[in-house]
Image: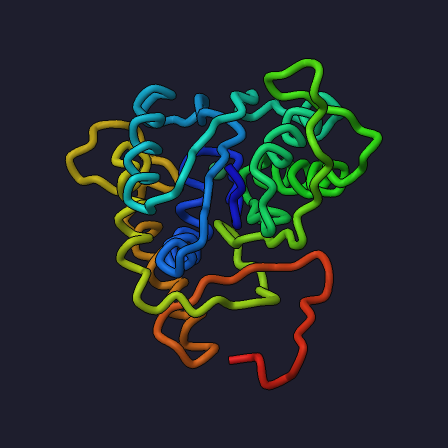
Length: 240
Ligand SMILES: [Zn+2]
């Protein structure tokens, strides 16, 4: 199945926190979107990999994405090397997305920056025909495929966006998808240890950031992205 957008995150919940409203908006516009998580988030202080899998499945249903896959890379320890790049290239070639969304270029969690460069490198390499990969049929190499754009969403740290997407009308879907991760975020009934993302303050900050980015571009809610290449337009009038 060919997708329009592949949203990739180091951990289940990264895509939700970084770009769920953009995903929801594109799905509503008829685009085919899929999510790939690099790890199962098995090192997370709260919950477990199994619970997180259930939560991720629920969030995917809320966002109405076509597929959600997990690379089963090692949480905390995966690296940007040939082995991991080849695995990801298989996934990129399988879904042939026009646009790839991935982690922030740099963040508090070390997996985010690593995931960002791994995805970006895999997107480039995936376009090289001499790199042969095979999915199910060992006699039939996959077709080379390079996504047109790689955009990095913003998650924990304040990073200046290059592009802000107007996600007005889709913020509730984002919050529903984020809080589908009941074990990870603020829940006054939970007896698990507090983490930086389980505080009430963090929960509030998800909405606040969307409002703040929206305020800066004159809409109600926004999600920010950074680009690797200059964002080009046909006409200055294309900008909102
Ligand atoms: Zn994460």
